[in-house]
Picture 1 (cartoon, rainbow, N blue to C red):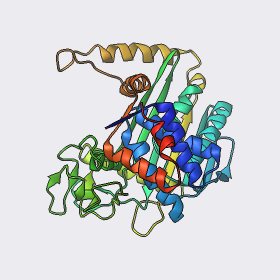
Picture 2 (cartoon, rainbow, N blue to C red):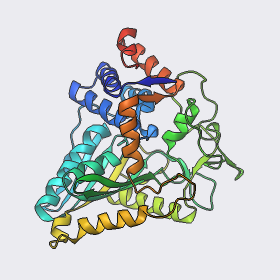
Picture 3 (cartoon, rainbow, N blue to C red):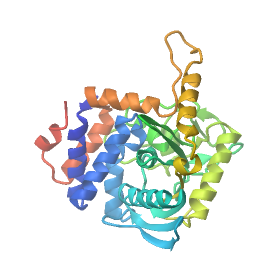
Picture 4 (cartoon, rainbow, N blue to C red):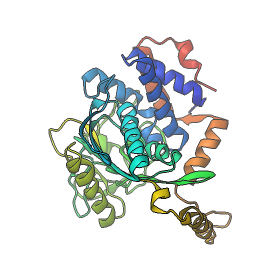
Length: 362
């Protein structure tokens, strides 16, 4: 296992993407967003994706230097095309437009189509919360057929993320951010590289048996560094929460995919993310100022529940991520050998010297 300093990891990842053809500002943004995912405990959306992103850029599946353009633009609604640009570039652009409209109107909606992989959607909810806004995000992944619906064994859904962010004056925002699959595909990727295993029932084989073996999703894969292709495996990821999670995933496909114009998940479609976002200014909804105090009271009441295990604690949404980030900023970010090896191999392939690479280690 490698332990890396967060800021040095940002620098290394940024150097990799600059060497791959991105402008310095875009490369730095990719490095920061991927590292932030690791800091908050979402390794599935972190630097384990470096090699895959670089390969996608080389293959033309994602494009550098893109900006969103408006297809529809009203005071409270925007429909935006990301032109298959990096999600770490076009995603924040879309969120900034939503923030500006919500601040002007009190309520706004932004439909983003044709974005490259958006990464951790919680980043965008945190952006809105920092501006005092509630936000809700429905996301789908076009061309990424990974998840079996409840009652089925065949892949029909993407991992279809869902996210809600709620600002709190003087405190970190409440943040609910999850894939509607039992685990994100990135968590299976991390497990395949020697990281934290996935639950033994996270995947489903063609015969309906449940499994935690990443090969069910990827098929045979290289033992050393090498991009895993989730489309090669015979099985699928399971939806979380049985029919409830499967139903929420379905609606993420309809709202994030069909309504935005990105398209729903299916065969022979170009990979992209679609995201339908809603922004609400609580200061407009709640002129009496009831909301902040009521949130604080409910957080305290919620956390007062007796824990199941002695010494345990009930956490509110977003609290685990806040604690993970504080710890990893202090102690460094642990990366599995497989993840670190893939980063090193990609850096070397792009001409970065070993001294540059080793500088990220604690």
